[in-house]
Length: 510
Image (cartoon, rainbow, N blue to C red; front, side, top):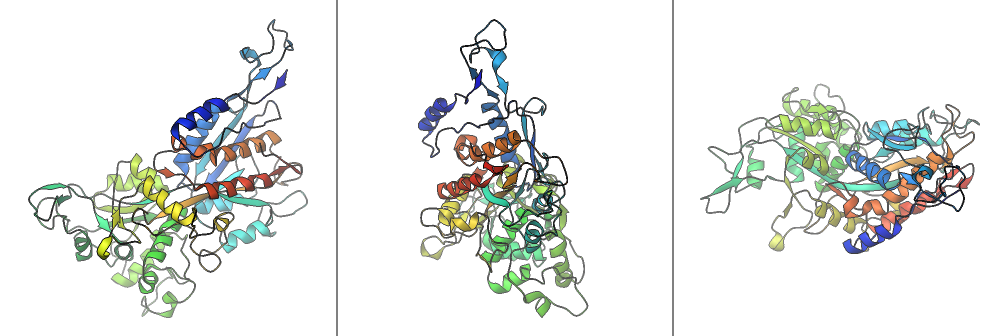
């Protein structure tokens, strides 16, 4: 009996041909450790959690079994060992039983924790084969990966090293500015005779001032001026209520994308107010103001910091105390569920969470104005995210795709803005981010001194999944609602990185 590839390619080719998607034919995993069993798990960003789980399910359904073909009856069951004999099918991937096959899994703990897990003592363990992050590696992260300061070492006490890991984009999506304003109404025209459910317009400067505490109420003049058709008085009007501002309570890649947008969209003075410098959120002392050197000096770098705590420090100065403090919630789901349950709340989440929780989201002002210089506003959408991605990384790329593969450790001084925020065009939604997978290039004997090594089959399974996710996984029918496909040029560069992954010195690419 010999093991062969799964016969699904023709069906996928036909399906893709009908849909017109720009992906190539199926690449079946080559798992030559038969049977291959065990977990293939990672941890990190919650931004891509819904997409990863959906991909795991689809991929497992497609590649669950390896079928066999033979003219012999090796198992002596009285039947030829052919693909029509179910007794000879060998389980390859399993939905949940790791003793029966390979099981894909991922835990959403935030980008900061995902990155620190990558170089922890549990590295290269079955439960820590990869990490997810929407933010760049900090200098601390990079030092821990490339020097002996990190806990992840080989039997020979060698750290991961600069060439010992890859960092490739996996998927992308829009960030929605979500709010809970019950019964808000707007007029259908300037005649103001009929009303309908309102959709707020916001811009980066206004969002910044909401987070710094300068704008406290929903009926603030700045918000009202951006929304001329929204009712200003009576039933359904902008309420005279405090804005219950919500931010992440942990180090977050979604926050990194959000803060990148605020940094790029605002003028310098406003950016400093939003805290994008080395003094951001510095504990206030008597007599200090937001214009003192401690707050306006230093590098202008988007923060991965805990915004709920950092902005509260700034609010102490703006308000003379902790007036109307920001609420901190863990993960995208934590913010989404809180805003859903809390009238007058306002926060930021990846688009799929807005859709999942049926939340309202503001239309945001785009980088490009409409004809005559009129402000242009867009609601978060897959189409708007795709447009921004194509402007940033497409044929006439504004951002070199090579910088998105294993990007530099700082966003501005080393490589410019990596995330495709505030891209040009009337159809480009302004807050869009990519999310990365971190994994190791060296596996096998002696790869990790702290634990027993994973099998070759597990490494092959991980590479096979990543190759599929960067290829067929980008087709519209394999994307979870709210996520956008990566441009082809970016995907091709990411897939090429997978060739660097080795087990005992040999490539395991399918």
